Image (cartoon, rainbow, N blue to C red; front, top):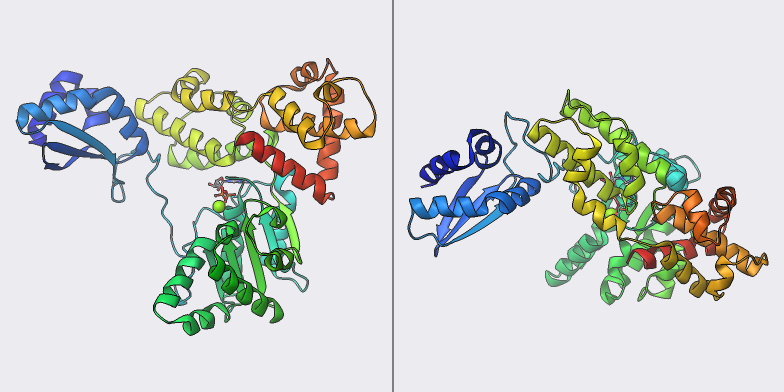
Length: 448
Ligand code: ADP
Ligand code: MG
């Protein structure tokens, strides 16, 4: 049936469109009048749905009268042989790094290494701390608590630490998993009356790493077990690394005793990537793509444009670039600004809608309990000046406005004043926990 339908389609849409879009599709099944077509990537799937769904359905109907509906879904091609098919969202190949132990360590993403981690001002402390723990000198920070918003590199750093320790000191038992997996294992142990076995495994490791610990907040028995495991390991001088999407003090429904234990080591946060870091990350990804898509040119200015416009998080930035390469390689065109705008229209629109400077000013004014008018007005008293600098900093970080533009929205201030404000906050935030938490909270609220 599919063969016949495909012949029809080839005639209708032309050979080159056919090869690009229809040939890679498979007919998985026909059930109750619904035909299921599978597609190797998300990007292709969207494209095919938008442009060819009707034609495909018609072709199928002609070939098999029982077909009335069509369902197109993504199914990763098995190891996509041959052709440089778009790699868009073929799931990551996750290879376990150390298959030799029977620890329930989650698979480590082979791309999440220290070498692939681009260091900039917003993440240099987190990176340095992670490195230090991975190097395992005499003084390590215990526990190391990494926190920051979505897509800022927490999991990347966790994997990098785990991998580094596993390679450098293979005798060390490293257990890395998400808090969700921790809970799942624990509940399973309870159900199977294997809690002794559970304790035995978790209390025998040299390094315990739990990602996204906010997940266990409010899950009482899991918290309890986590707390005991945690204390036991710390008392034994074992290394613990934890990540969360916010500071320990801000995690709701987390027991106080756990909070205070988490706070007893080193707490570092990852700040949203600034323009320079975004550009650096894009640049390093392009270097990788160069090997994957040799000969695919990227026009000057494209990376700057993306770094300027996509401010939300690194994951979105990466996704944009991936799509861009997939698209360009499919249509066989150089990556120009025009192509970028065409291919990423939805992402660009979404990031434009993001945060306005006025939102930022209102939130900040509210947070510090100062009047909006004072925040943008000329007052120089400290009670207003600091919140104003915070607002400037957030405006620089969360919007794609230039310094002169930001200046205009702050009552016509000069761009050097804005730059000074931004620098001031950057300088202070690393040593001022309160400020750092304020920034984290505000940017989270603004981006919600
Ligand atoms: P989080 O766990 O904080 O939500 P991830 O660690 O999953 O974020 O990062 C999201 C994506 O962004 C990953 O693909 C990661 O490799 C990438 N990424 C984040 N920060 C960096 C960085 N500094 N350098 C290179 N890649 C980064
Ligand atoms: Mg993560």
